[in-house]
Structures are given as structure tokens and as C-alpha cells.
Amino acid sequence: MASISRLPDPIQESYEWQYEGACRDVDPETFFSPEAERGPRRRQRESAAKARCAVCPVVAECLEHALAVREPYGVWGGLTAGEREHLLMRRRTG
Image (cartoon, helix red, strand yellow):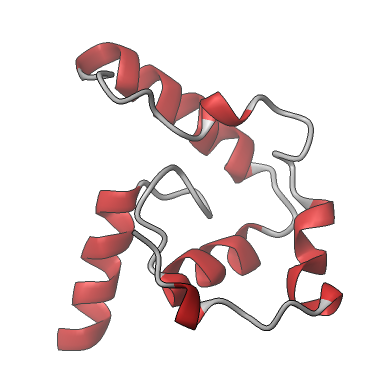
């Protein structure tokens, strides 16, 4: 679970980048998997989410937010939770 202690202060400017996200009008299920989703279905959903991220003007802000709060679910900034964890480990050992 994401730690709320790492969340930015509840100031509008801290979250304003989200208003520019390419995902703002997309069903959230595109970015977050159902509990039992596995295999090809999961990979297809994640690919669709990543395609949306690929054209997003705030993808960098989204990814940095997800890394800062260690968001444990979904596709954020074009990366899955596992990919983000791998990136964090590489940054630590870098």
C-alpha cells in the first residue's frame, strides 16, 4: 500500500499536473487490473494503458509521483508496479 506520509501536501498545485493527463477521460480499469487478471488479458490491458501514457504530456510528472509515493498498483507514468519497483531498485544501487 502507498504510504500517505510520502504524498504531497493537499495543495492544488501539487496535483495540478493530473488535469493534463491523457488518462483523465479513460476508464480507470484500463490502468488498474482486476484482482484475478493474469496472462494475455493483463498484458493487453497494460499495453493499452502504456499506449495512452506514451502520448501523455505529463507522463514524467506522473511517473515521478508514483515513484515518490511508491504507488503499489496500476500503470503510472507508463510503467507497471513491478517495473517501477525495478526502477527504484536500480536507482538505489545505481
